[in-house]
Image (cartoon, rainbow over all chains, first blue to last red; front, side):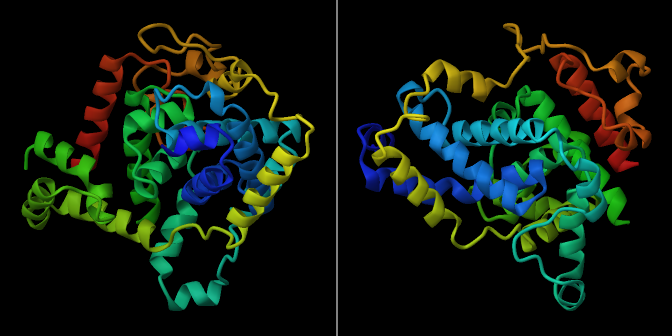
Amino acid sequence: MLIERARSGDDTALDLLVRRHHASAYRVALSITRRDDVAQDVVQDAFIKAFGALGGFRGDASFRTWMMTITANEARATLRKRGRWSESAIDDVGPIAADEPDPAEQAVSGHESARARTLLETLPEKQRLSVSLRIDDGLSFREIGEAIGSSEGAARVNYFHGIRRLRELME
Amino acid sequence: MSQTECGTIREYLPDFAAGRLGTDQVGAVEAHLPSCAECRAEFELIQMLLDAPPVVPERLADSVVSVVRTSRRSGRRPWWGISAAAVAAIALGIGVSTDRAGNVAGPVPEFASEADEGEAWLSDDGLLAGAPSIDGLSDEALLELLEELSEEGAA
């Protein structure tokens, strides 16, 4: 099993775990920090911490959920450490994703899709995380609850509330 | 269209749109969507989001692998020595605990005590105020809230 191999120090297993879960971790980190460079640092730190604690991973949750939980908390801790350094400035400029297409490109291709994604980032953190983890990563509401520190029911409400709000914003 | 049916279909929509749904459920969704404008609109929104996923930096995996390997081989243990308890604390978050029922026992945000119960999270002002917390609500209250959201969506 991959986790067992990673626990015993198998580099290949560790690499596989990174390659399998880094994209989801990045999306969680970006959703919370809203900055590409910070999100990448968060993902790196989260994997280092997770692998450092593999011995304590009991398998109650899936590795993916466990990894998302650590990433989300690492992202929040990073924001706290930086004194939420420029939250207002970040809000002013909106989310910055890697290789974000310029407005002209967006207008030509997938304008509405890009708009939906941009508006998603304006929702409160738990709503946008619930929507993103459900849609982008296919997590169940139980898994989302574990990842964002909510109950399963709260994750479900956050998701549907986020979807409803997004539909209103798109109109 | 019954709310129960729409509720079930809406739960399936993300996995349906992403091609992750089982055959039986796919049939249920395909049978439902043509006759339900609300669920169809939600499905279209989900499709839009899936069409524009956040771009993950190409070299992120390589850089993480590199840093992890370097850390492991350095002999220094700033992270390898982290106790499982410490990481468990990270995973559970700081300052929040739950009882057996899963209710949050941490501090209640100030706005929660000021808001009119049952209204705050449904108001348009909720977004401006930072969205009231729903984490401490009971399962019954959450169910009620879901039903209200469902009714609003259908209205």
